[in-house]
Amino acid sequence: MSRRSNGDVVVDATAGAGRSRRRTIPLVLTALGVVAFLVLVPSNSEACLPVETPATEQAQRAVAPGSRVLVIGDSYTAGRGSSDGRTGWAQMLSARNGWDSTLDGRPGTGYANPGASGSEQNTYLPRVIAHADEDPDLVIVQGSQNDWTVGETALRRRVEQTLRQAVRQWPRALVVAIGPSAPQPRAATTGTIDAAVGAGAGSVGVPYIDADEEQWFTSVNSHEYAAADGEHLDDDGHRYLARRIDAALRALGTTAPDCRAR
Image (cartoon, rainbow, N blue to C red; front, side, top):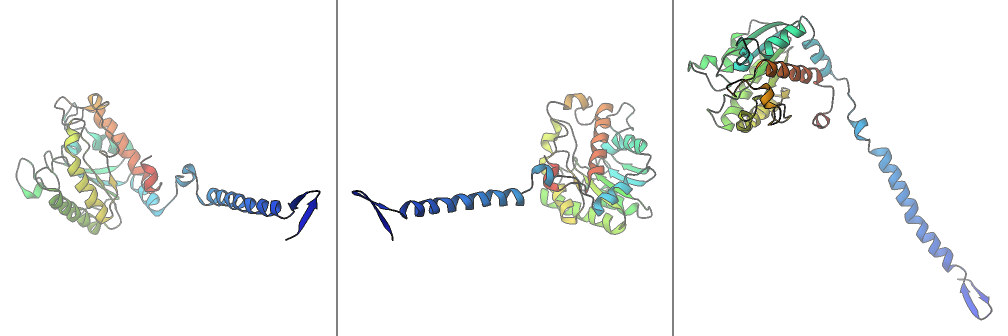
């Protein structure tokens, strides 16, 4: 180590330089780390840009004018709560999009609940099988807030059986499940049903439109859309539900799942 004498003071000529070099290295590495982070991690706007996928193309074909659409559901599909008792979200959406629709809505029914008749033929699985001769482009299974008659595990099993049958029966169709979509305070009682239907749809690989999780009906807006009985939707409510379902169908496959919730 060289040393330089400056009068009575002895100065280590290399000490300052050594310390300077040691301080520079972490700064350089830190800067490189920041650059790497900026390069490797996309922004939220970049990560959530719409992307075209086969699911996108299938959804576009399924909702196009003239598409053959089958809807199986409960009183919401039947139009209960509307001013004439039979023009609900499904009828409105079909007319707006120019679909060739078969609407099978039966009040009080569900994946497990047979409704007032008590006949198992009114549950969703037998009704799916009953429509086997049809050739739909889009199959919507709606509901069901009526499925409080069985536990979550049993309901999930019925959902899986029903949706799996639909997928096998119509291999070229887009099969979609829509969960409970009641206004508040009725919606507050459907959490377990929503979880079971969503899990069943997920296990079969069927897209699930989750009105409950997306909070389509809240304590703030429900009074604008609820029918007099508080259980169903009025004309404005059915119209609103039709718009939300239409938008959800058209968005299938266009955005990464973790971006849709934002």
